[in-house]
Image (cartoon, rainbow, N blue to C red; front, side):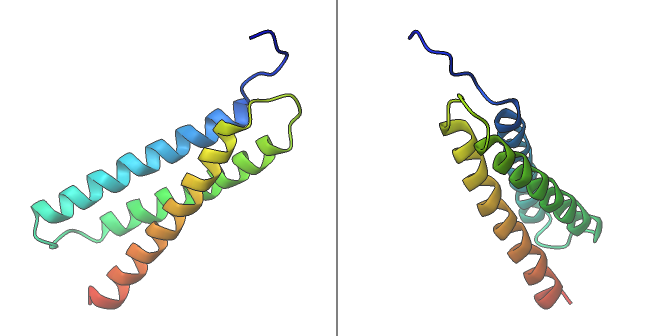
Length: 101
């Protein structure tokens, strides 16, 4: 209760980026299902942009973990979520490239 610890701004940024990327992923998957997989190539560009956002989130999360006197759980969750989302986006883009024709 009485502590000098604070939330890291970079950790919050990283978590926000991960949340945005997750929302874009859910919307992209829903759009793809609604169109039975026949989606424009621009959707792949959205995936690449979201993957780039995850790289920024990973950097921000890593920087925030080096800060002193912060609550550590936000940067840790954000870093894990950004790494997982980056791997999933990469797999989706590669699968779309290989199997999409």
